Length: 134
Image 1 (cartoon, rainbow, N blue to C red):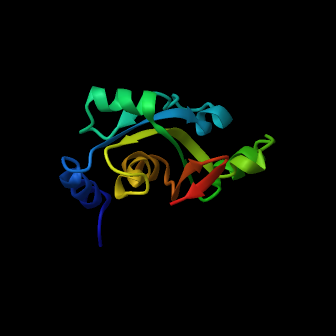
Image 2 (cartoon, rainbow, N blue to C red):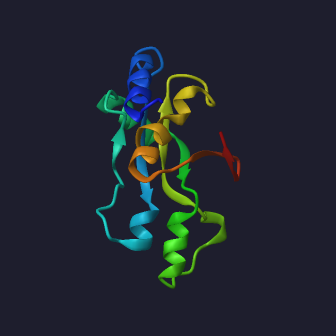
């Protein structure tokens, strides 16, 4: 069995040759439920420098991570309207990578934060006016 710690250690070993940085710009869980402190402004991974994080903020590509629908089920149960175009979306943000789009680093926000923090299972990137899953 492979643990999350083992996956994170393997990713950390690749970081020097394939650096990236991401920052969260929207916390939909906080918007819908407001029960926790917002994650907006959270950045990573921990090896990223301030310069890399600033590049994510200013030059970054848009991403979003999704769960299996739990975020919406609980909102609907609370009587809230849920936009069909946002079903499953938990966090949105920006990423800077040293490599070309579509590389392994593009899974960073999902592996580093979305999966361990919320149980997210998918990451999407903006391509034109569409969200596309990796």
